[in-house]
Image 1 (cartoon, rainbow, N blue to C red):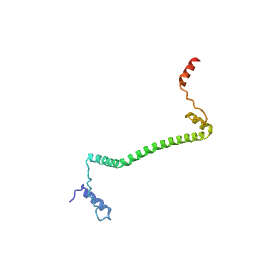
Image 2 (image 1 turned 90 degrees about the vertical axis):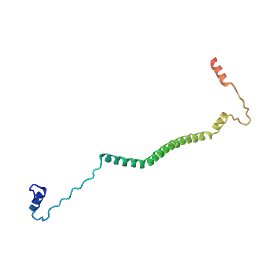
Image 3 (image 1 turned 60 degrees about the horizontal axis):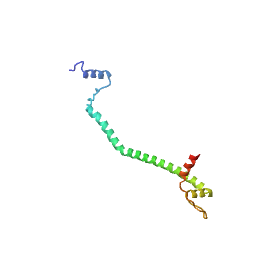
Image 4 (image 1 turned 135 degrees about the vertical axis):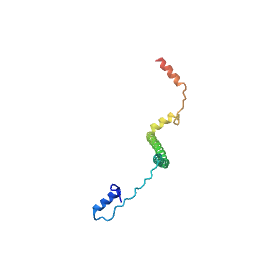
Length: 133
């Protein structure tokens, strides 16, 4: 006989009260949950993050290096564009005959038929002249 306070007796009473139920409910045995040690529950996510980080390291490093090279080349291109604009401006100015003659004289060239004079000691002469004033 069953103890009136036992779980099986209560289950039988609940079933018999339902009337139309002929089968008793079967309780599934509780699954035993596999408990992992606490340190393992901490190590597994850290290991997964480490592996993911390792796999992403090379592509990220390559991206950063490529971005740095691109920035350096963009600065170089901007500098070259500025230099080109200055050279084009200088070319436009040098097409006039006056500018061409002035540049030729500055570099030491003379026209045909002109006589070239080389004067030395100009800085000393300027100093002496400035002292006289």
